[in-house]
Image (cartoon, one colour):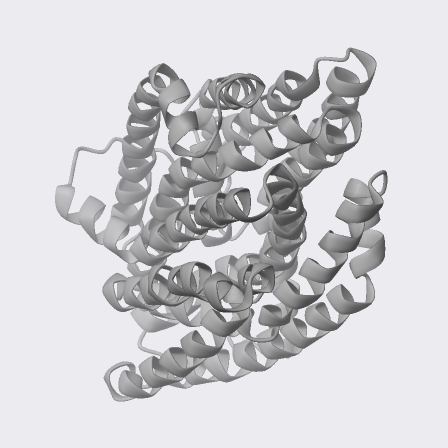
Amino acid sequence: MKIELGGHYGYGRLLKTSVPSVLMMLFMSIYGVVDGFFVSNYTSTTSFAALNMVWPAIMIVGAIGIMFGTGGSALVAMVIGQNDRERANRIFSMLTRTMLLTGSILAVLLFIFMPTISVWLGATEGQMLDDCTTYGRILLCVLPLFMTQMEFQSFFMTAERPQLGTWITVVSGVANMVLDYLFIVTFGWGLAGAAAATAISQAIGGLFPLVYFGFIGSGRWNTTQLKCVRSGRDWRNIWQACSNGLSEFVNNISYNVLIMCYNLQLMKLIGEDGVAVYGIIQYIAFMFAALFIGYNMAISPVISFNYGAQNHTELSSLLRKSIVILITAGCLLTLSSELLAVPLSKVFVGHDEDLCRLATHAIRLNMLSFMIWGFNNFISAWFTSLNNGIVSAIASFTRTFGFEMGCVFLLPALFGLDGVWISVDVADCMALIMSIFLLRKFKKRYKY
């Protein structure tokens, strides 16, 4: 089914348009969740903690693909809105090639220095350091393809074929689940099996768009408006795309750096058990956040198209309706987390009564933030879609590195372990004030 960028978007069309991207992001979140489920139940607490230490670092590098994708799709969609499809394809092709080259260089460097990076992440000598190094190096073997998969989450929507992205992500997610069971439970490969399963599924997700759009092969199946064409190196467009996507890049980096800070704090307070419990919180947060991120990815090209076409009435409508949808979804997710905290904890640590009790308490405190998290995240995506990456980056950077990181180090000194769990709640309340301020400040400039 084709989804067009133009035309009026009511609530029904907004929800229908966002479904493929939301499903795609949900299956993306399954990578870490499924690995965590099998590792926590079939290996050791040390391996489970090692996975949760390394995965944020991999996601930080993968965020480069998100930056190229979100920033590039905003630029390409705006150019399409200006009715210059030839230039749009040149920019699209150039950005993908640049991203692949960047990913390949980083993969080699990080593979070499993975043991040192693991120590920086908090791994101690012995089994934890070995597990961190093994898990990280296996995933780095497919890093360029993982970055490609992240990049094309946005470009599938710009190409008006979000369902293709959804289906390949579903296939990748199912492959990850099946291979996790095969490698960990059947073959007994432990954490290395989890890494191999994830790497194979990421390779599937990254190769498909390269083949479909013609970066590998002829791309003869591609009937969309985006195609691989000859392109030089236009550093101005590369810079504009990266600056557009800077906020998403900063948001992902800061989010994963925060996870590292949480892990370091928890290692000091209660050791590996704390890292394991926070890993459970993150698995739930990944799935909740996927709903909001998927919505933003689907709607951002629509916003950029209407901005390029100077359709200010539709821009205003998209803003109002999106806020209603995201606040409503946030309240429902928070309520769900409060009601389902016990069974969610038992999925991962049901074999350990003390850990299960600690995880239940932590989930109920931490997930309160989702009432407003989606709104704050959307405001950053809103300014990215308007091709104002600087304001978008300021919103993301301030919320994470300013508000939440400050809370992570300050609140535990005041409230002990509970201070760790409520850090995100306090940070999002402060970010809400900033989001409202930014919306009001730039209202006249963009006429929404």
